[in-house]
Image 1 (cartoon, one colour):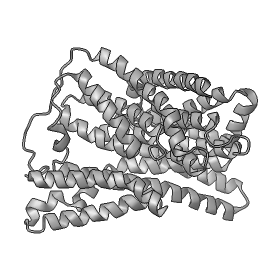
Image 2 (cartoon, rainbow, N blue to C red; image 1 turned 90 degrees about the horizontal axis):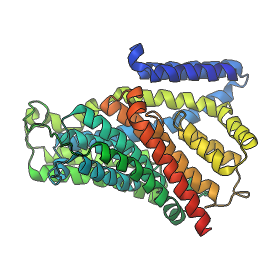
Image 3 (spheres, rainbow, N blue to C red; image 1 turned 30 degrees about the vertical axis):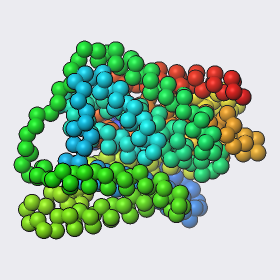
Length: 428
């Protein structure tokens, strides 16, 4: 059974990577993979009640992420429909691509620590569509945004799902993770930015033509633009606060906020005729979000869940502990593996393998795990939620990302590792 599951997962992963040459949508490959893996697991296990319970648990975890993603994407679409991003774009006047790259990198880095890397990626890539006309430039910026978003999320307890897992589990504390991992995360971003700015030296920003798009953007007043922009971003920022106060999952906060934004929009445009307000409504925004990417997300998360329930990931962690031995090497490898396999079950398996009695809160293992698992996913486009979102929003090819971005992410990853190890040895 285990061999069959591993072989099918590898084949499906190859199909996802070769989506464009095969001309088969990655969502179809992910769904088929999930269906086959769960079928094999169910037919190979006599305890069908246990399999059903495990599937229910996996579906619940997947649904929470998917609902959050749908809510965030819808909010961004509403802001976009109201030309809300002009609040930011109107303040950016640089004509140099390298300067814009530094600006976007830092904004993404700090924004993702307050929101989360997934939402930040959606917001920033949507913003790039307003600033850059050249599609190749937008693709390159999207890759840097993925690196910056994952780096920014790693040092904040609410910035990345794996860091949040360690925070909730008691492995790390808020101030310790921010102090311990911030510098490493910053280097993870600075190295790719430095290389990229050299590559883009002398190139100019090509902005989209200022044209009126009939049927896409109706005329909105400055008040409407600012109101919907501030409310949308405010709702996204308040989701972590909602979670802290209520202890409810983040998707509940995003859906609650979506309802508030929906009602605000209805009241704001209540006096307009249906033709003028149709494209400004939440109903249209829900139709505009990329459902193909969401379906892919469902498939890949359910597929990876079988690797967790069949203890393949736990056995992998145990094997690494036996063969490698060194903590820093093990966590470095886990971070690199998270570029291939979702980092959530990898971190979950590690949390189950290493006890808090042996490795107390804020120890080297847990802080280093937060950095590596949070930033290692940037090495491949499907290695993180931010990457998957970028892949869907800008239609990024897997091998294009490998050729143009993976090397930058890898250099930044090891740069941050070196900084964290040196810093830890100096202050501990």
